[in-house]
Length: 550
Image (cartoon, rainbow, N blue to C red; front, side, top):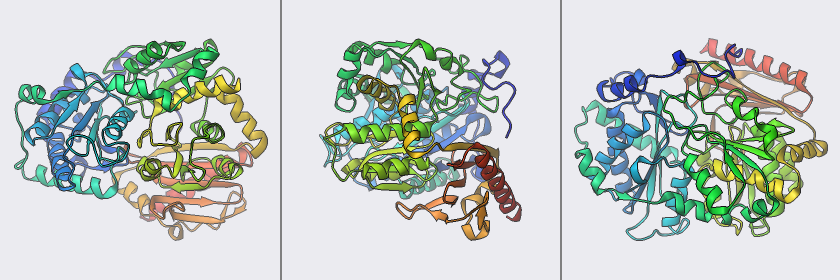
């Protein structure tokens, strides 16, 4: 789709949400469980929706939290539950609803003080720390967690996701069970949901210092001494999200030259510039959403950003501007596996199948195995937990990697350490990640990559998710013979929820979004931008024809 003429421009007052109307809808609108659009639906990152569309309301959170309580009890998870929220308007009331149900079910809840926002990776870090980095559990048994966030989604959205005792996103079996039980509770008018008054729930919850535990541990995953010694000048824009307080604490505790260029926290996110379609998104991989930070690129050695729950990263350098997420992932992999002697010799590289082929070439050059999985960070959890993966990353600017000694750090995406790694690279090599990526292209070629989003109805998304290579019928692509057509990921055989078609020097993949009413076509070519345009054009024709056939 073409970009909006307002893309990259500051949001105007009439483009902002009305938080009061949104909160009123959260409490007053009752979803109709007979309407598929108003049921609980766990995508790649939990349940998301908006109170204004009757898809993220109090009933949804009460039912989903009860379902989580029953699921964790059945799984034998009896330890504390760490819960965090981001800065979206719907996150605070959803936290309140969840606490009322959790405490009523006898769960030992750990929450930040005074409604303080907590990033997704910090919850993963807390779970793993309690459980002995994947061990048998700490005092009281195994811990798990909930993060109330729709990630980078627009301000009117809410999100709710469950992280089991492994610290990462719940797998399909768990999310399906939770989703089905939550919808049954909705259909029963919430009969079966235990709930107590909010004041009582808040008094029973244990206040937890997430900030100190996470920030103090950072030198064990990133070389902060090198950053400090080199005097790397760092600019950070948290995009109004949960990392604001964390970046301030990182700078103070570790004496780093960090300037947080935007400390505003506003549920309208009115300080943002508009994304490609004229909507507000806190997407640090989008040049439109990052327009304000891009204007400051020359003021720092490296400039960094996170989305609202800090599980995504944005990297800006003076010469390259905003790095394409694939470029940064490739550079990070190349650097980490050459600068982490404490990592297991057999640790492999994890990538989603819509990430760049440059990663394949870098991994091969390093002599490391490559594990290619479907979209969704849940596929990296086991590998990061046991150290068989040194790195796991997604093209949507999400990644995590092992501690410097080879043990697990987080099993969910961590945009904070991904950002700090950019500063470490700059400190230890004397060249920023943009320069380091250019060096990689000199060795392995220069791929052109693009993702195109297009509107899709729920019915069209369902068709696309079940599409097979045979139904697509592609034998050639942009002048090249098709060498592979996949509906399952080569790394683990799991369904990809779409298709991927490859030639010797190009590929495309098509899949529905798990969080918005769009489908995505990803494409890459090592034969130049004109060839990439041909790949995209042919991919669009193939996908449109498949959707038309139903």
